[in-house]
Amino acid sequence: MKVILKEKVESLGDIGDIVTVADGYGRNYLIPKGLAVKADSRNIKMVEHHKRMLEQKRKKYLEQMEELATKLNKITIKVTRKLADENKIFGSVNVPDILKALKDQHGIELEKKQVRLEKPIKEPGEFFVPVKVEADIEAKVRIVVEGEE
Image (cartoon, rainbow, N blue to C red; front, side, top):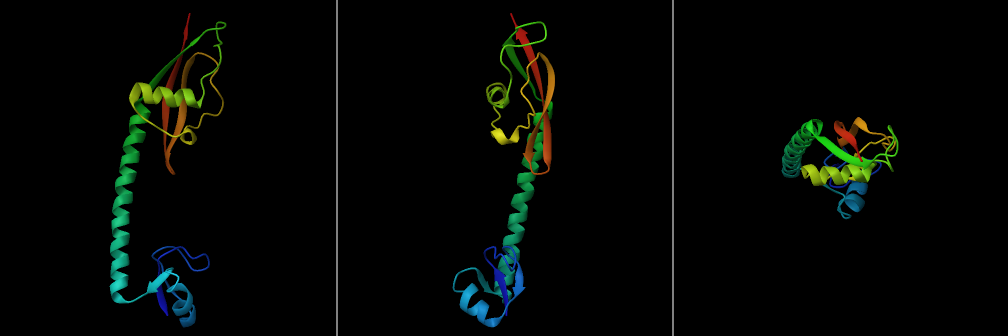
């Protein structure tokens, strides 16, 4: 019996996959539990249409993420800290500081896990911090740490 999976089934496949299963397994378990529907021409067309719609949404989402990455690559964030010595600042600049500056200076809100700062910035200067916008889309935000007297 051929069925179309409506949910991810561990041993069979992902949503939308058309798989062949034993008649009893499909009729007595998968279909009654709502995990699959019988693969007839109507259901196959419906699933293909649904996949096309999801693909269009995914393309649009990826385009938006590419635009955000381009915007982030052009951004410069200025952070000021009091100077302790010539090449040291009081405290450090870390991820929450970067997120706050992005929101305050440019109106961009990101999640903490997206900013890939390896270690806190503890000296004045110019730094490039990687930001993971999407799974395979990464940008670098320019951060200028200035000392104030």
